[in-house]
Length: 169
Image (cartoon, rainbow, N blue to C red; front, side):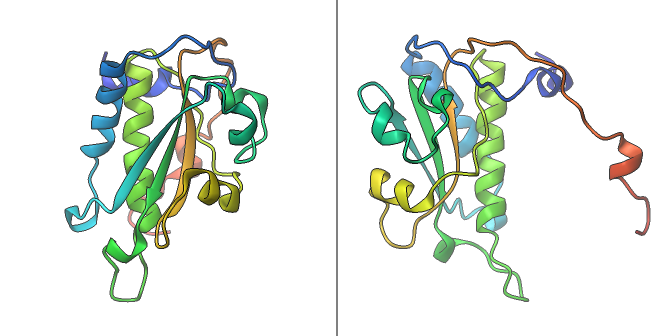
């Protein structure tokens, strides 16, 4: 699929079929995250893939919307801030690096006919406990991963004239 078509095809899925996702397809999507650029190529992230079957109640503690646990898989993108590149002024690029990896994963999923929905409003304490994250690992974003049971509605985006400035502010 043409990249510009893929970007317009992707949407936030909020209803999933329970059909399992083939392991090879999951590996393909995960590999897209692996190929994401990171500052100084440090790759300071880990992806945690969780099967939802039989764990829906527990996983709902991370994010309480029913559709979050409908998909057969949930993906957690986690950063390791101590491994990240840090700019001279102290800005740690943890969130940036993890976000780029998650975006690659989400676009690869859409390309493969899978649905995702970026979730940032999760409970970090529940996520840490349920995923048994070690000290120094930070959950940054989650997404269900599965086949959509809904269809894309209209998506509103600001025009470029409201988002882009040339040469200066």
